[in-house]
Image (cartoon, rainbow, N blue to C red):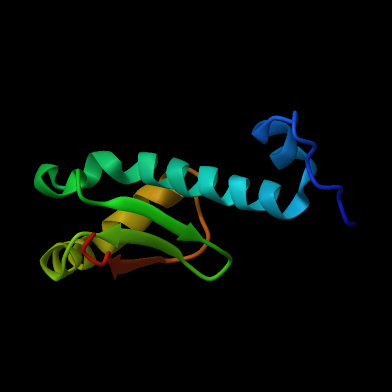
Length: 103
């Protein structure tokens, strides 16, 4: 269903609510953040500040990591992280780690 473009005075929140694709994107962003919140306490303190929740779809949930060393450490923790997600009610796609390019 096509939606009309937002009028100049329309708020961003209203535009998001009226756009099915944007609403779906916003829901996936919130779900990704909620998953991250469920595992953040398990992440090593030294890595926690550098790990970010990434894209979530039917096939995978991505954790963005700052470097290959962080990815290696978290790769060892994947079973524990998946278990914590399941315990929090977040079954579903497996976690994939992706190194963020430098800014």
